[in-house]
Image (cartoon, rainbow, N blue to C red; front, side, top):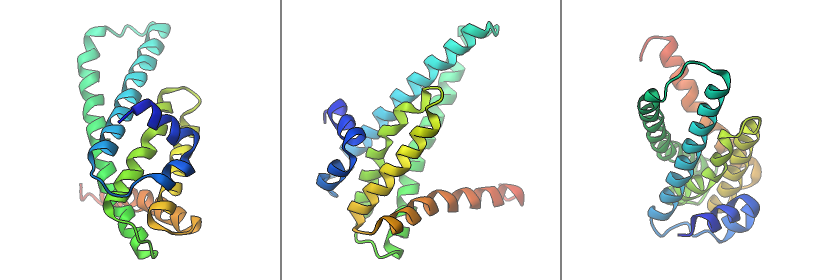
Length: 176
């Protein structure tokens, strides 16, 4: 897998990429792509974090770098696990809406949609990156599950809204 070539295709020509993306063939390449995207996002976030701390003369010492790296690393792992869980939820929603794709296809397009995460560390671009990732997820879902844009929008938003609502209610009512 050529990460940079694939990343450019996903970001610059997403419809073309998702149309020709195989919906089967294993999880290795798409999950590797997502992992690389997460790591790049993490490294860029650390650079921005340290440059802001240095500019503000916060008294932060680089000896705390290990702790922060561990926290961010665990966070990345949790994001990676959530990719798999949200793909399962999205796949079930697509199926309920008449989609014909598979769980593997859902994991594949969700993994490649993580290309937009690279921009999360860039100040003032975070919201654009999140919106673009949503657009990539919607587009990927349309092609993989053979559904309309409306159904894909519903599936993508519900796959994020339902789990966050459940967690919020669980926390509010003391189940967690």
